[in-house]
Length: 279
Image (cartoon, rainbow, N blue to C red; front, side, top):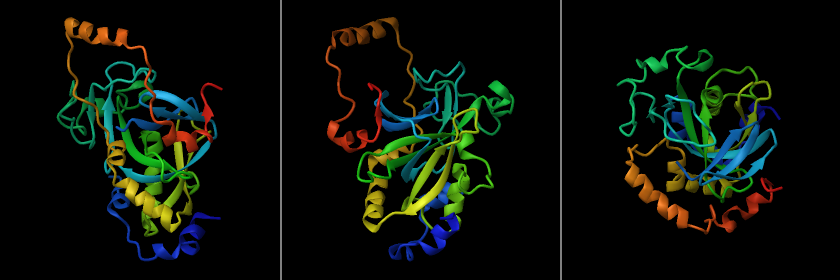
């Protein structure tokens, strides 16, 4: 089935009167939750409360986008970013226009004029300040389940592919919007690009949701968890004194029982379809 066939011939009756919503318009215009999907080492990883609990080694994964950041954000790390020990960036912006008030070391009053935004300021000839866009998604086979945050890097956001089965996200969002449809009415396939040296996701439409699925997705998109998952945010950085660090370390030494990252019931149906890290 081609993409055009999907939009022209396979449209469910209930969608014929549904207008394009603000989310799809914003995402098409280019314009922190505790559960997220990470892409590292060419593998989709399920992260809950910073702990990896499962992984999916398939090259593609079907999701439904329930919410998303309306603007592309920015993050800058003065040192080398360590994905195994994530920390707040030195400077960051949720709207890509100016540093957030919580940024601990703002680099400039304007993102556009910032020296970290100059091509060549970062490693490999790129920009030291990186583009980031966050989405809130649910798994296509569990639309009533948990909402996960998905963070896209520049290679997954920008570009123009001649292959409509392998579009970067902004092109995909514009494509859906140009068909007069909402992005949350579709099952979306995200695929790891095997031709890219760095993790890069491409997107394509798979099928329209059934009415009851779409209604569940609309409700999910309005939840606090979805709004938080779609928001780029880092708490305000505070310098800690040695005495304060020692006081905080003592209770940690006494703690003996490890808390479960989430209730088993929430992930039960999903985990059967994922590969456990313990296997």
